[in-house]
Length: 434
Ligand SMILES: Cc1ncc(COP(=O)(O)O)c(C=O)c1O
Image (cartoon, rainbow, N blue to C red; front, side, top):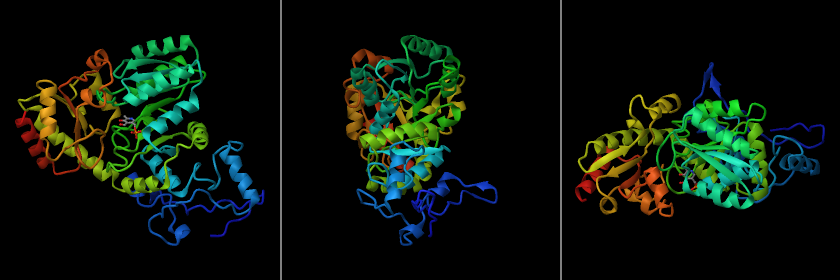
């Protein structure tokens, strides 16, 4: 492909030929676009799939092109790098991944990271300053709470939270308190919350934010790991940034660790600058694996969601089960059901199983499973089960555990894509073994 020299004398970057995004007025679905969007085989020797670009740096066509690229990387010129520069900033595999990731939520831009936590850390570092108060929903994933409270706390950042299911009035009260303390740089949500599965009313948060901060509204970021990107599109409901642990459903095979953020170019730009500086980008190999994973994302998540509905229906009626905390079983007319109806397109495949009894019963159940694996994490092709009180949330103080419903009889389950009746047989025999 021939490129014309621009006015600076630098040849603009060779871009992939534009992707086909619609046919006959029909907008193509992300599940279709995952197979080819953002990659032009003609730029890679005709290779059908993108090669893995294992290189630490990229050769400039000439000195003027190098200067132009660095103007983009350092923020002298808005919009990020105009070309490939150095693998801490960008790379072909990461850029294809980011183009595809953004499609699921119809976002303007997206970034990939080395883990979900490095995405969240880079996000916070991009917006907060000493003395600020971050407003967040509670609970958050335990490491996110540690990051905001203990680590950013060391640099003079404060926080205030409201419970995940809070009403608009309750959310406004907390925002007012935060505003009275000084600058509010960011509103950070997680929905459904880990591990309670409680949903946040994103529309109410956005309305409260707009009412209280009409002049310079702080961005709303939301951890969309549990239901995204298939069953929950928070950017449609007033969130500005959607954050992912791609380790979970997006990666989907429990064989990689990665993170992502999608949103508008205006908000993604400062996060990209921070990522360029601190080097939290995903590596080319992991980005390539994620491209492969995204091709089957809809298939995997749909099957896992259908399986979870069948397994939960079985578990709910079992005599050894106290209750099942599954988004498909929300009480009709309840506030949680109202949020679900307005925000969610599916109940997911991660839920809480409360057994009759305590630690002895939950351990006996976990130790008897034959198909499901005893491991933390979620969103993989295989079914996983764990005991949060004794594992992921062991260090959480007892009073907070009680308040969040993280009791000794709680087993967290993430359903995979196995045969649903095989899974039911496994749970049946494990319950019998208690
Ligand atoms: C809701 C949520 N957010 C963020 C993370 C952190 O992601 P990672 O382990 O990819 O850093 C996790 C991990 O379990 C999570 O469950």
